Length: 390
Image (tube, rainbow, N blue to C red; front, side, top):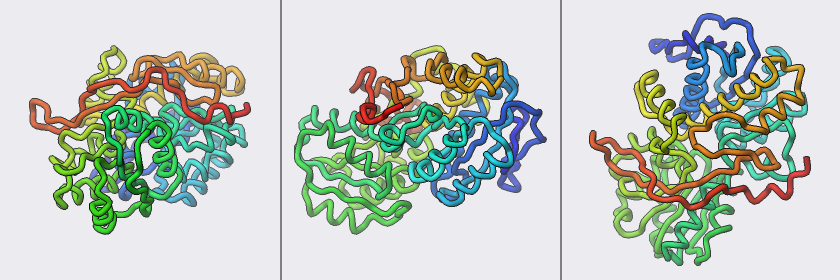
């Protein structure tokens, strides 16, 4: 684990670590995220988005000094659980955040919130934590896992596709993804395949897909999985024959650089994009590029909003975390300017928000990125809120 004084933190490139001088004492925030291995880009973007908000506050959130303790989970549930236990018992963190993957969230969040620690999810939103396992100390600032897939199910139905092939990895978020798509998609299913988490070779799946003769493909393969699938799909000559649709997770900035033209023109669903026209988003995009030298991703926007949400609650209690009830109420009120614009929490502490469709295109510099081409849902709420009894 490293303690990050965010305003002066630097990448120690030669060592491949994120290092900084010791941070001043403040409210302790534990960040467990993925900064190594195949999913590293996602965790790094969440970390950097969160870091940007602290930098903008001069080392503070909501005017309150914070000490952010960052640790790499290596995309392993057992590692994440061990880190969480150490952060709660030894570091005495008051707030936790950072987890990318739903299977890691399921391993960490229930135990953390039972200890009285607040967990603010910047990404993973498994259905269990939105429904029967919801908790008053757990807030998700990103989404419930099904949401972006629900939007794509609605969109694909509206475009008249009636025989769609479905593919996702076999873990909680993958299962939620296809459940969400099918909740709003009204056509037939040509095939439904769950792949291995972390899989890199999709030759067998692509052969089976081709034989099924669907009129479209919907897939959820985040991180390196999506990169490999899209490249292999294009190499198989299917991109021009059978259109693919998916959520933003497989069409974000880092992934587009790796995939290249195989992603050009693909429609994907998201609750955020760089071209959302509000002051908070414009400042975030400009400052992120100036600070890190790259365009922000969806994950960076979520890390940033997570930090700003925490800042709004810290300001409400003057940094006094002994005022747990007041801090919780302030989180629920969500009185911060989200980069998404309109944002509020439902009764299960998950977002009620607009969801868009984006198109991958080449900008005036020839760089692949996304632009919003329509809105699917306004003030959309997840399907599990009725199962939450808080």
